[in-house]
Length: 228
Image 1 (cartoon, one colour):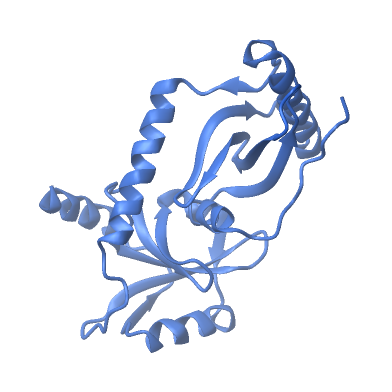
Image 2 (spheres, helix red, strand yellow):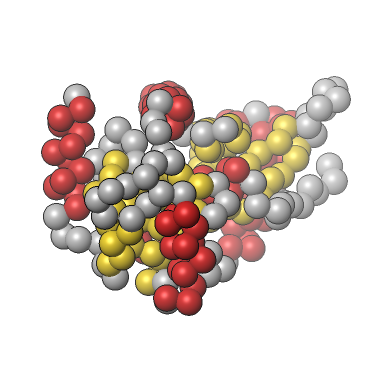
């Protein structure tokens, strides 16, 4: 079978959704199935040393499989292994894959439920507002490409106290995991100035901090208890 290379696509909704969670969007791979006209299309996202493989939705990635890198293994070699296993999946089934593993069905269902809750939260929330009080914000830049993200540490990202609300020029409001700080660095004033100006224009009255306050997690947890 002809090897299908992983395509590194232009940024998509999935790309920015993953970016807000601190993940790295890799691209898509298509694997044709014998006797079937349409090929399987898989989205691949890297989270630390683990690659998540699944399908894209309007709420992010729904992961079906995962691949864990070995110590010292390069990303390119890992992607070649993933590519080969996905071809095996298309022709022989999941039992014959060597390193790509199936995520247990319970975890998949939990992932789908969380994605649905995130979607409902966004639909039922009013994001554009005029703040009379100051909103605490921390600006960070992704280490990979310098893209700036605004983090609102005292605002819930979804129904998980480990998340906070965020905002990017492309994608706008979304949920960000606390682990996002590991994949980002403090943004300089020249870097975050355009985003800060945009937030002010849509109604925010910003209080800019350099670091996420130590009590932010506790405040979000108490806020979540009040909602429930």
